Structure formats: C-alpha cells, structure tokens
Amino acid sequence: MKQSDQKSTLRKRLGIMGGTFDPIHYGHLVAAETARYKFDLERVIFIPSGAPPHKTKRRISLPEFRYQMVSRAIADNDFFEVSRIEIERTGLTYTVDTLRLLKEKYPNYELYFITGADAFREIFTWRSPDEIIELTQFIGASRPGFDALDFLSQLQQQSPRFYQRMHFMEVPALAISSTDIRLRVKAGQSIRYLLPEPVRLFIQKNGIYK
Image (cartoon, rainbow, N blue to C red):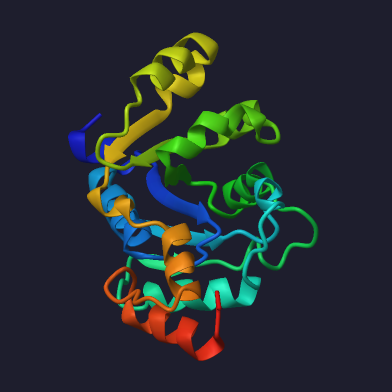
C-alpha cells in the first residue's frame, strides 16, 4: 500500500468536551485547544450537561444559560462547536448515552473525550464504564502539579484497557475554576480575565450566581 493510500484510511479524530460549564472559563478553552492540537483533532464539540447525576447536591444554572455561555465563549474559534444533545434530553444525562449517540452520528471518527484528569478517578462509578471505555479514547487535562502516578498504577492493574486508552496533558490555565468564579460573583468580586468577556457580560446581564 502506498503511504498516501495508507494515510487516507486513517480514521479522523473528534474531540468531545463534556462538563457543566457553570460557567465556562479560559481553563476549559485552553484545554480544548491544547487537546485539538496535540491529538490532531478535526474539531472539538462542547457538550453542556443536562442533568448530571453526580451534581445533584448542588443547584446548577439553567441549561440554556450554560449553553449560551459556551456559545459566546467559542464563537471566535472555527474548530469549536457546541451541542444541545444533553440539555434537550429529559431526565438524568449519562455520558454513555451521549457517546452512543455520537458514535452513531460520526461512525467514521475516533472519539476523544476531554475532561479534567481528576474526574477520571470516579469513572468506575459512572454508568456502564466498560462500554464507555470501548466507545472513546480519553484525554485527561490536569493542573500543574497534579500527581497521576498512583491513579495510573491503580488503573493499569484494575483496567488495562482503560489504561491503554488514557492520555494526560498538563494545562496551566486549569488553575482557574468554575467554583471560584461563582463564589467571586456571589461576593461581588471581579471575574475579569478569568473567562471570555462575552461570557462575563452574559453573567452580569442575567444576574447568574448572585
């Protein structure tokens, strides 16, 4: 087989950025752009969660608000798009259901699920973790100083398949957190330069987190 022919048979890669995005901030955006470049992703789809089962103890902003914030945050990047696939689903939204739908919609793509590296410590508490592992590769975005060695060692023993499909990358901007931004707004403090200006103005206009 010619090298050009071999290259044409390689599956394209699609990034999936899941999260509540309450609110979306520069850490999310830098993580998505870093993953897109490092893993040669054709584009990255941001999927604001609808009713995530692991966030039931905290009141989450309206799904439409979070969708609008993501839309404003990514408007200037042609490689980013946002999906309503979860916020329009009724009931609790599970990652495995979303990945099934995406696999059907994009059969010729290899999926790469991007999220915070610390979230993967809980993956075996997610619904149908074995199926999730088969549906997607994983990109764990970690803050500087995040120690993944113990987790990776445990993962290699507990699930060699997951270990083989797991990739880590360090993202300095992840020192920013949605929790801190919400607390700052509630306390009347400035959130400038922690997130895109259109998102800040949307939060201000709609009185979110007050």
